[in-house]
Length: 176
Image (cartoon, rainbow, N blue to C red; front, side, top):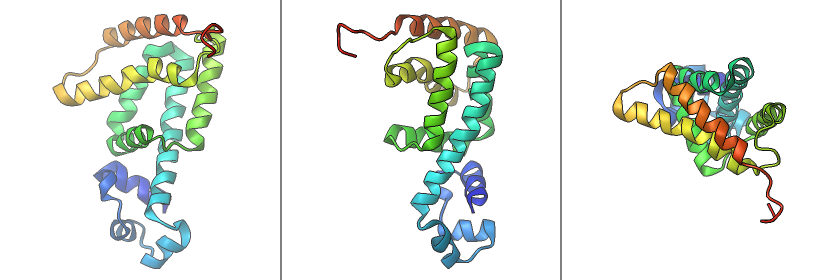
C-alpha cells in the first residue's frame, strides 16, 4: 500500500490520496486500507518518511561526491522528477511532522559538516535554515518564474552557503 500511496501522491498530488484512489491503485479493499495502515494520515506520514529517505539518499550522495552545488542540483532534479513527493516533504516539514528518515538525514548531514569542519556545534535548526532554506526558495522561484537554475547559479549558491556555514558556530556566550 505504501508504494501505491507514493505513486498516487507523486503523480496526482497530496490531496489525491484518498481511500478510493488507494483502492483503485493497489487493488485492496476499503477494509484492508484501515486494517493495515490504520488511517490515511498514518499512510501519508509513512509516504513522507519514505520520500525523505529517497530524497536524502540522492542529496547526501551528491553532497559527498561534489559538494553543495552538486547536492543543490540533485535536490532540483529529484524535486522535478517527483513533484508530488517534494510537495509532501515541504508541507510536512513546515508542519514539523518529519519522521525517522529526517533524523537519519540530519545524522548524515552532520557527518559531512563535521568532515568539512562547517557549522561546528551549531544548532540544527540554524544549519537547516542556512543549508536547506535556499533550496526551497530556488524551487519556489523556478515554479513561479519558469526560469531554471543553471550550474553557475548553483556554484554561486555553494559559495554563499559554505560561507554561511563557516560563520555558524556554537556560541558559548549566548548559551547556545
